[in-house]
Amino acid sequence: MINNLRNANFYMMVILDLCIFAVSFYAAYLFRFDFNLPEYATIQLLDLLKYTVIIKFSVFLGLGLYRGMWRYTGLRDLWHILEATFLQSLILVTLVLYKFGFDGFSRGVFIIDWMLTIFMVGGVRVLIRAFYSYHEGNSLQFTPASCPADGHNALIIGAGRAGEKVAREIMGSGQLRFTPIGFIDNDRNKRGRTIHGIPVLGGLEDLPVIIENRCVNNILIAVAEASGSQMRSIIEACKTTGLPYKILPGMDEIINGKVGIKALRDVSYQDLLGRSQVQLDTTRISQYISGKTVLVTGCGGSIGSELVRQVVRFNPAKLILVDASEANLYSIQMELHHELKFNDYVTVLGSVQNSSLLDRTFGEHKPHTVFHAAAYKHVPMVERNPWQAVNNNICGTKKVMTAADKHGVDRFVIVSTDKAVRPTNIMGASKRVTELLMRLFHNSKTTFMAVRFGNVVGSSGSVVPLFRRQIEKGGPVTVTHPNVTRYFMSISEAAQLILQAGVMAKGGEIFILEMGMPVKIADMARDLIKLSGKEPDKDIEIIFTGLREGEKLYEELITEGEDIVTTEHEKIMVLKAEENDIAAYATELNNLLNQMAEAAHNFDGEKVRAILHDTVAEFDEEG
Image (cartoon, rainbow, N blue to C red; front, side, top):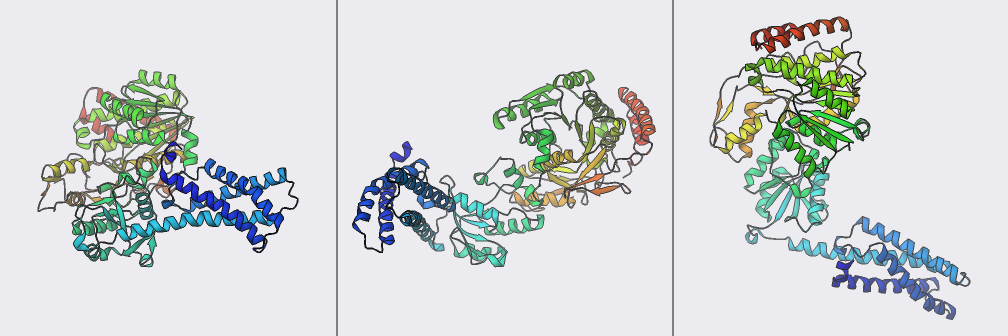
């Protein structure tokens, strides 16, 4: 309000409205009496005029109708005007009823006055909005010869909801240094139409002609959902123009509250995957997270830290953060405290291999839900140190599950991997054993489940960060094999689907996330080189180094013959839990685990490998 008092436009708005209030009330009497006011009506008019103007102005001021800028008047402002004028008329009628008893007063006058006030007040604001829109529209007309190279005119690719959002926020913000001058969209039905007064100029194929004939300094990509091939076409078209281009953040980033339009960013490889937005059943997820204590092991890793971020969205009562890495634990703690503003957490620096620490942690904090993401995942590293796969991935997981069972945890989610399917390496075999561990707890009151998925873009073990570093150094980019393929999704998408799968389990299921089409790593390398503005095999060389220890050409999400069914979520499938002779199998599995633990204790890699073959029938190191 103080700022308004210092603004000359505020006084002009008030004076204009006071005139409208008086004129509309006077006009109401004229209309009611056919422009021939009797003497008693004139006296009524003069008696009520001062009350009318004061009441109307007080309501407008009290409801904040002078806080906005008329040049940006929209439907919401007109709705507020409708509410305010109705309240004005109600107060005025109440005053007349109380002071004069309505004897000799025409009800029609107040109805006409209300309608005229809406029309005149709203009309003036719309006219001002139209004036500014016309003025700004004319200011955008440049000829190519006079187009400044350092200007801020932006062409928006995508005339859908995302494009409209970009245009609206740019036009409504004084902080964004862009001026939208047109849209590009391949939907021919949109061509020639306008959004907020900004025309749809053509399709992607028309981009060179539009750039040539319009003053365009920047290109903004605002496509909410597009396939990988569609996004590649858009980016190739943008690159040919030679203009700088930015992209609207992914929907998962917007959902997380991380970004708005101000965070328009450079295109990343994640944009080329063409992954659609995840639809979450937030109500059911909230039921098992909101107000509950949640424990996350491996909380500082790529998946674990993203799980923490996603869990915080659902307002847990407390977070128990468990990690063996001091640096990783400190990093996620600082992010929670300073960025996410969440302070109800407890940090536990220690390994999942420590039974006493786990028992104390579970006993003290009584977690309701556990997300177990702690594991060694680097295939060649684990291949050279197979005993650590047993100690950490298998025995560590069993110890966490035992603590959860003992202390009455409600839900336990194991983060698994597609490398557990027909494994060809120690890491994959060890993760398959962690899935099998659920059968040891088939009588538990804790609901155990596993979630299996492929690679995540940007994780600590992902090839994307490695390729970026190699490109920054000028190459070469190293790929193991021309035909090696992998499944990919974003870290945030994986974490969201893990939370969603936690809702669905009855006990013992392995959930499989829909990973889309597998991606050739060589093609990924070429895309990343192009995104950096270079040409593959010309500016940056790609060399093939051969498959590493334990690696195979392609990954699978299910083993042939597994009983897989769909779920109510389009991106989640499930393997049915096995029930035949489960008690006998549990005894056999326990014996194998004891032998495996002894071999790991003695650092006997060959024996570990042999027992893993006995435990996981489909383990095939020949690939």
